[in-house]
Length: 252
Image (cartoon, rainbow, N blue to C red; front, side, top):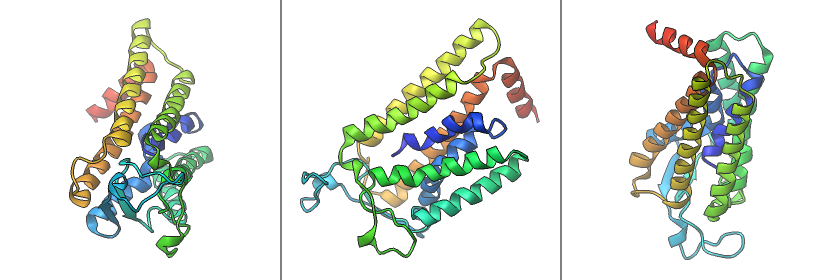
C-alpha cells in the first residue's frame, strides 16, 4: 500500500477532533517514514530489485512479478508487527503530549491509525513482513498484491478516496457559498493528487537503481508532504474560523 496508508487518519479524524489531521495521517504511514530514515542511516536496508526482470521470481498465480515497488527490503524494526505496535503506541503518546489532549479517544485514534499499517502491508508485500524483529527472512509474510499493479492501484486508491469522501461528508463546512465551493475544490484537488501519486507508485517503477541514496529520501519527502497536504483539508473544511486560526498561527 502507499496512498491508502494516509486514509485511516481521514477516517478517524471525527473521533479525534483535537488532533491535527496532519499527525493522524502521518500515524498511518509512520513505519514507512521511519524505515526511510533507517535505510538512509544504514540501520535497515532497501535495495533495487525489479521482479518483472527476475526470471526466477513467480507471483502467487505462477506468473512473472511486476515492477510495482521494485525493492528488496529488510526492515525488522520498523516493519515487524511487534515494532509497528510499539511505534503506534509511542507516537500516540508523543501526539497526546504535543496537543495536550485530555480525550482518550484522541490517543486511541492515533494508535488505531498506526495499527492499520501492518494490516495493509500483509495484503501487498512480498513476504517481508515479520512478526518479530528476530523472525528469519524465509519465514516472513505477505500476499503479495504488489505483483498485480492494476489491483494494487484500484484497491489502494479506492481506500483513500473512500476515506476522503467520508471526511468531507462528515465535515461541518461553515462560511459563505463561495467558501463551500472552495472547500469542495480542495477535496477534488486532493483526489487528483492522490490518483497521480498512486499511479506513479503502481505503474512507473523507480527512476534509478539508487534506492538508498535517491529513493529513500524521495519517499520520505513524499510521506511528509502528503501528511501536510492532508492537514490542509482541516483548514479548508473549517470555514472562516479555521482560516482565521491558521492565519493567527502563522502570525505567532
